[in-house]
Length: 180
Image (cartoon, rainbow, N blue to C red; front, side, top):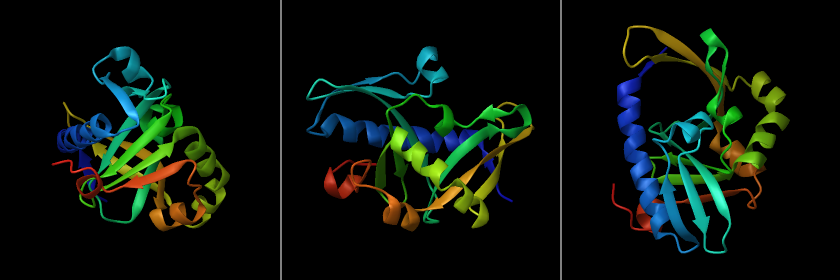
């Protein structure tokens, strides 16, 4: 089992967040973007950006960056099994999840409420099909590991069952000329 290193994951996440941030700044339907990643209040509710749409609507956005080319999107239900901590995607108060596959240049924008309902609806299917996964993670400042639990949901399954009202897909470098 591969162990994820926090420092490496943080570097990758920062790079993906910078690319997604530029996408949001250049998107014609977005009026403004406020970076709240360093605000403890927003960290507690797993929101990275506050976005004001051109129509005046304000939305919270959580960004996840993934380097894998597995064809799966990871939905974390438990972030640290050892302390029974709820997973980010179960507890985030963000309105939208921006899930960026950095090596594939694909950004999935998912309405978080609809996506959460989708995962809950198909949870027994994911369990029986072996999509439930446990990932070992290496902590930043010590030698301990912790276990994240969730579902590695095939993108093909997501595409065939998602509604275009709650999922959009972009190629950032092709569609928005965002440089990485």
